[in-house]
View 1 (cartoon, rainbow, N blue to C red):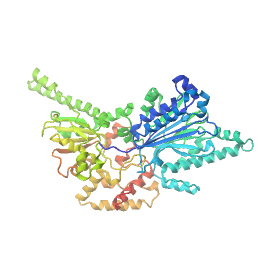
View 2 (cartoon, helix red, strand yellow):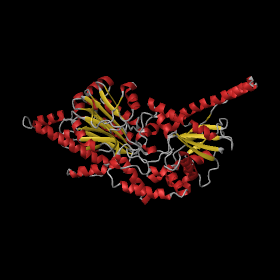
View 3 (tube, rainbow, N blue to C red):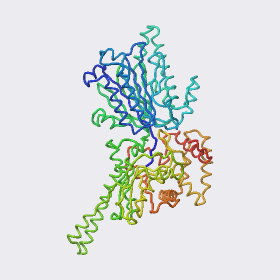
View 4 (tube, rainbow, N blue to C red):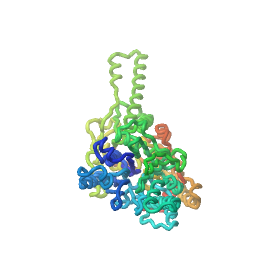
Length: 629
């Protein structure tokens, strides 16, 4: 119901053949840029604040550009970028030139392609924050083009390390800091090779020798061990080396494929499957802590840079963010729907006859399918019991049997997202009234005051849309009871690894727990937690503990859920009874066993930086620093 700004999307392509090869086989020199466009469009769900494209042209001649870049802001950024590229290619009059000219001079037709889709994870916006970032130098081997799906929890210490080297980053952001840090390592790698060969050659030969012998493993290993966070960092040098490094816990996703024509990496597996029409088994997941590296000569390797640590692959990635067309994610989301059925049955009192089932929004559709599949099994059990009971009582007739078998789940589309209303033109209650009409309801499917309406969502984070839109909209159908189901557990803690989860005080589950403490005269827990968080700041990161867990410890999940309902309906505008049903943490772990990273729900952060930041977030909340996260 509430759109989360979340981790970005990345795409990289390395062509392993001359451009003429792709012209002959696929009918166009633009094979690489066309495939990049598809990879980005099919990951559009991962970023709608901005996008960027970078291209490295390895055979460009001196005096001509060899690193091309286009960036744009807004949800239509991809289209704007590729329209601009198309215009530049059209102006180059490619049909009038031979393949040698294309290799040397055609803009945006090169050997390395990089694409990025951006969602801000820090609240910073503007074209200067759009990836890819570019570090320029007059030597091709010192140019660095970089983008990533990441958020560093220790950007302060990384910045200090960069500044201590004498560098002066122009912008304080983790992307710029990493760019300068890796750029410094790249400079040192250039110097290492220069010193090795300077006595035996000079000039152009020496420059080529440096380009041919860059070791990106050394570059990455010299800096990446200091990073704390979740990341997939992608980069390319102006001379033709390409890399993508994944964090050691596997927090952020990355998949790759290569053959004798192409190397490709993307944030999601089905994107590669569809774009290149290749079987799922041919696509590999990049091992946590490892880097996919392609050198100037086109040699492909996967190298262990950081070492693989405890598996903390992001569960929210599977629940909400990734495209559901991936076979594993589809199966997992269905299981999430199955696993909430026992709580749903309890909520409706096993009353199938007077319950209508639906989903909001479309991202919850797969969980809805799983939920209905399990509800069908439960209904079949009810039918079997009714038949056996009638048989034992001697009252089973063909007419009664037919009546029992005609019982079906009442599955309906109760809500349709009609239009995106421009609620920013209104204020206060008038804005809330507009928000309540974002969805249109299907009338005539609910018996007034008799039926329950059950809708499933993939997550409930802030509760704002639920209060201002969903509950009001469903109440217009006049049901006896509204049951809102979340296929994920209660989101209790912020994320610090690339997903824009809100400030601590904006989580509806956190606000409910705080209110319960106040209701029960336990305000001392709030103060004690604040004091402990302050004490934690004196410790080393590795010694810290998540003190915020104490806020939730006195209460069951149901108690917090009930309090959320009370808070959402406190104004008395909802006539129906309302109940929230959340996935349990055990149900989520059962559905997604291969991705145990559940710090959003459990507070078990995979890195020390996450623990430090969640304690700091509580301090900011307690002190009323609403501008800080």
